[in-house]
Amino acid sequence: MNKPILGSLGRNIQRLRMAKGLSLSQLALDAGLAKSNLSRIEQGEGNPTLETIWRLAVQLDAPFGDLVVSVESPLGENGVQVRLIDQGEGNPRVDVYWMSCAPNTIKLSEPHIAGTTEAVTLISGQLLAGESNDLHDLEIGKVHTFAADVPHCYQTADSWATLMMVITYSKQGYAKQSDSRQDVTL
Image 1 (cartoon, rainbow, N blue to C red):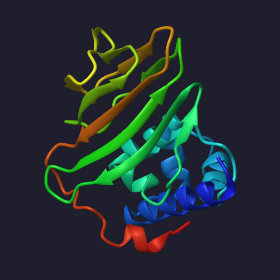
Image 2: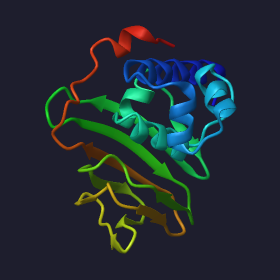
Image 3: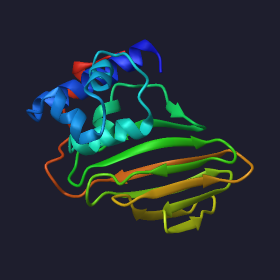
Image 4: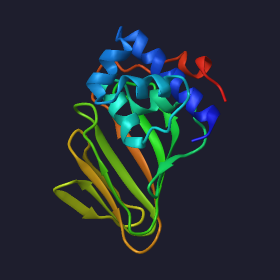
């Protein structure tokens, strides 16, 4: 990730952490990170993985989109790229992502916030997706919905796969943070 992206991500994490009244030490402990690593992320340094960002979102009890809201280029690692397309304002909260997976990629995802579901629509390529113990072979243009508050997986064959992912969080206090787009810009 480049410096402006890391800076935006770090400021968003810090803002959410402080709003929750969590110390740097407590969030680092809860997310299984070294305090120094979390400090570097908040300062716009380091190179957090997608899983680290998701883990922080879960510990902050916040949608992933709230951490990456001002990041306009795709975030990626190990053959997977993800970009936030739009955030909903309703309850339940719904966020939409574009995702691209390289050939022969297996992306294991940790559980998200309790009650979260993912609805995946394959745009191109071949993809197995779903709960880790119940993967489905997706068809182009068809939607597959599964629980995302359990371990889940995306697996490609010998070609790239492109998909739209709609993440729906359970009905809770997730109102779109109206000030988040104002706090950080690229």
